[in-house]
Length: 144
Image (cartoon, rainbow, N blue to C red; front, side, top):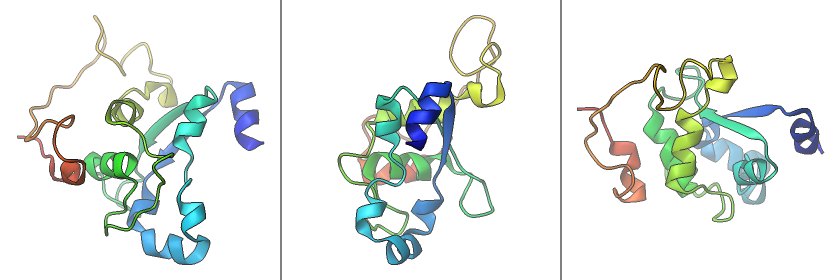
């Protein structure tokens, strides 16, 4: 019901990857069935809810985006425990979009968030191709 209300209001949800870092605590507390859909990112997107991905930086997790992207794609926590179900994980492009196309969270859509004339942009040369590296090695990608 909460997600239906968010969708009706045109709202969005920002997802953090702290579960991937606190995987065993989450599993012990809530169980594998709850972890399989926590958070239900695919369902949020199907409902038309805007979703952004990120971290809360060094308070619980890491600022490293590749750890979050690997969790979103494989469903596994940093220790290797399966959390998200195969029905809940995201494909690589969707996960990357949630991580990079979220300027709406700070109301900066007219300044950044996509590659377009006049918008701010970053360029990174990466150690591996995010789209072809084995999913369990996404976390190893670095900027070179």
